[in-house]
Image (cartoon, rainbow, N blue to C red; front, top):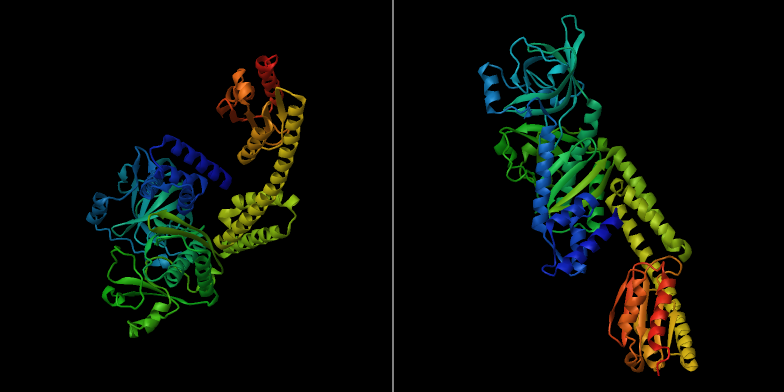
Length: 588
């Protein structure tokens, strides 16, 4: 993926430069590199700067927002059935529920575990509206939204995904008569809507249901939420108190945290953030939650809240490491700022130790002045650390390898990094990239050394051949030389030809890699007497390269060019000799 991205960028720069009207990489192109090729915005900006270009970061931000809007729409469309109307309770629907004296759902049990207390179905919502009293929903109904009088399911909020699971409809004898698979939970004006499909039997209002929350899935979500709070605090410690939360996503795979910061974090800063979070996990800090009056809670020293968010009164406070009862006795004590304290209605661990492990797997730009961190906990974090260490050790071992083995192993390791990159610690990924860059420089230096030696030998051989041709009195000569396709070597060779071949026209052919069919380089020098006879260097070069699909440029005295393939070098050589013979043989 990395190689594809570099090639795409290079082609993009060439195309943009060819147009000549701008040296700006458009936001749409930068977003494509981010979204499809895995190139963070800051990496694209760095590459653009090195190429003398800039990046339209505002355009990138607009593309990012458009993608978010598309994703939001796609998620909503997944809940659509029938005529395409999304299962969303608008003001009209919540008013309908209230008009029937149905109280908002009691969802206090969403913070509890292993809840099996029965609830009662208040209403069933479909694409055609609420079902009439006594009318049942079945699998044929399609998507349904079930409103209960009480719920143990967590509804999506605060960046945390909703619980999933089942609602088991019980008959009068306590047997399961029907089931509803719950794939999403949303709350509207206090009414919790359990979205899903009827998988067996039928369900209607007033039915008794037992919640079957997928607590195993929740156990994967909750550590990521608590550690998001710890991460937020760690970022403020490392980057400063002006860091502000700009968004988050917490699910069973990972945690994602967006925050205000104007540049990429350095490897040292990333390491420090990861260390601080891991340290909090290792300290086994208790996590406290308490509902407090909003005015009182806002006075807590070090408390974090999302700017622009409207919080309820009273508000739920989550404190990592500090007992909220102690905090209430001395709200403005600066000690509280040493740990994470936030307003939050989400689900949390009772102790940070339950997160077990933490790995920061990505840090990138998502908009101008906004960075994003993606991280994992528990088994995923252990796996990320293990793979990262394995690749970092492999990168470190490159330094002791011989030049003959280095290039193949570097290519193998680069491929491994592309495949496993999203799964490893960002810090280890940086180490691996540094090792690969050092290896690549070593390979390039070795190749340059070999190329310089090859070119020196090639020029020496060419010079000897030219001197011999001049001594024989040849009017022209076509030579195969070993200079690769190095433009600097051509300048050096041309200088020698101008000095040695005062009476002989010389055309040289050089393969990029002899026998490979790679690029073909051609250059020629024609003395003035041969020009007067009708041989022009630029025409001579173009005739030869034409056999291989190439072209050259220059003047009648000197010219050079390339062809994309040297597969027909024999034909190019024959044509060059034929052209020269046709003009020069028999000339004075």
